[in-house]
Length: 211
Image (tube, rainbow, N blue to C red; front, side):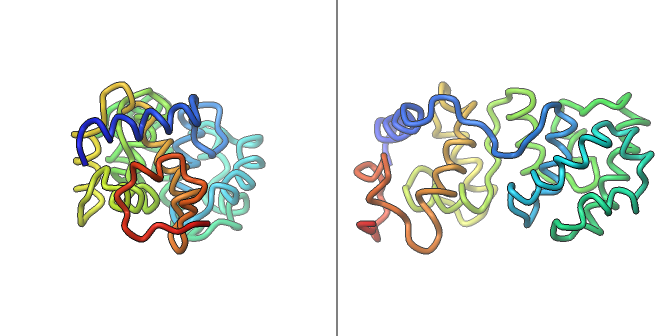
């Protein structure tokens, strides 16, 4: 895929959705961090349902520590892997209080040092909470990037590196949101909705559908 086609793809995605955002509900960087940690192998809808109650009771590291691990589990038990997530969140909150004054750090190294936070989660926080031009590659973005030809790679990291290299600078801030939403609702896994796709004619996927 050439530079001009990549530019057109992101231009159309922007025209279709000028102000994309995460579908996780949050009001502070800390709330976003907790929501993203909870979202691993869970839907945004299930996370939002749990955090709607949790954040009214505890939405700071100290408040969650005061809940305790069992108290936290009671609020997130409807989410997959809630036991291990609760353990990580308590450890994470303790580190935030003891090392960061209760604030979410703004560097990748510090974020990835938190329990339950890997590169993808760190990228989401850096991008969505702090406006950094990072691209968090999940299964949706990995699929869309490889299918369309925007960025082909055999691993998530390869796709991320290619996207960062080839995405025009003016689109990098929102590229993560455009691609994940496109993969979630249009370029779906089993039968992509090519007939409803705003970039169909620019996409290099050979198995396009009509639906």
